[in-house]
Image (cartoon, rainbow, N blue to C red; front, side, top):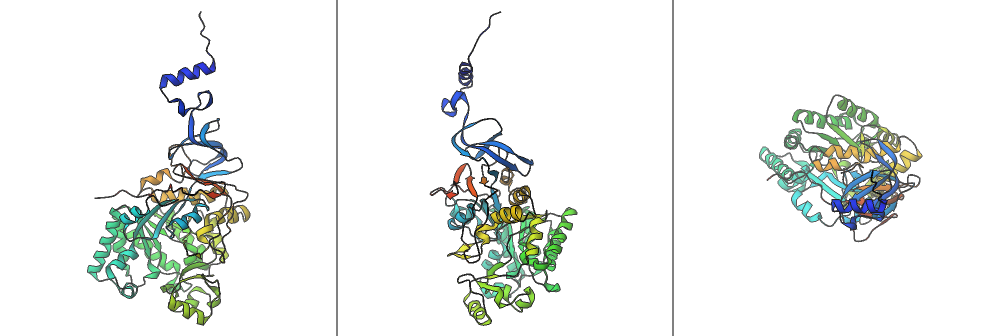
Length: 483
């Protein structure tokens, strides 16, 4: 019998020729060469429960292979000793610009969503952000923007209930922005106390029509029983139940304060009964907001259990007195309220129902450290150092849980929050031994450490812990546009 002897090199060359693959796509010995290969990282995928040393291959903006076999890339990243995780998704990011992206991307964020506030004009917002962002970006329709556009006068917006005809126009404004691809509907009910419960119901009804989740800063967040977070949660839960709208409750500890454990159990009970409700938290013991807002109307000391000395003026970091409080309230600006118990933060971090969201924005260097440090603080402090949740649990709260909140409305999220073949090449590669937030209330724009590489849509945006200049690979993530 005649034997045909063929060398490995000849065999591979013949095979390549037979399938007509250009030689430029192959490395040595005919091995396929990918655009980017990440070598020897600890790949953690929260959906498949993968936690193993693997090589990850990327072509274009997609993950093409996850393997223990050797592979080659035009660009190669050595991830030995590092974790390769899905890019973090922030569901409540108010700083929607390049300067805030630079802070967030070093905190591991690859997708930044403006959901609580939403956008005034969704179509225009996506157009204006296109090509300008380091992170992927997305926004919902804002109930507050709709109210402002209809009532116009700021005093009216805060103090006056909408008439029936005005309510119809508010709902029409929300619907227009959902048709334009808005990811959900955002509500800031504490800031607009004259919004009637019927107006909230009508707005939820519009959201339900488009299967859009309602992202709520609820009406109450005080220690007084009749105006407690639980009462605020009950309002939006009942409204969601009546309309069928999915519900997301924003920053639970900053609303529930010392009642956070009970508030989380309330939400968990609803989930166990099949109710579509989710929530988020940020890992800090202070909230931040406008000093001139309705949050500080009335007897706020009694409502929050704090006094003037617990308020920090963000620009100067001075603790306030009665006199300086009145001065700054007349001027307007950002204040930090040291009012959230550490136990509340720990309860939220360890709860299986929460996801992570920053609620952050830095403006002119002033703001809250949650903008720069939220995700790395959860990973470094609360997971590694304090140990109240595992690394895998922390990553799931930053990725898969958030993606699943949006994927029914926006199927593009089915390819985010995961490290799987075919998914978007949005990846955060970090050193689990060194990852940590550095931002403080005195220096809120200090960037986190430990995030070594970040890939956004298949483009390396952070390399060896530094933002790559000129790279703006972020894309808009948007629901279907309805004509």
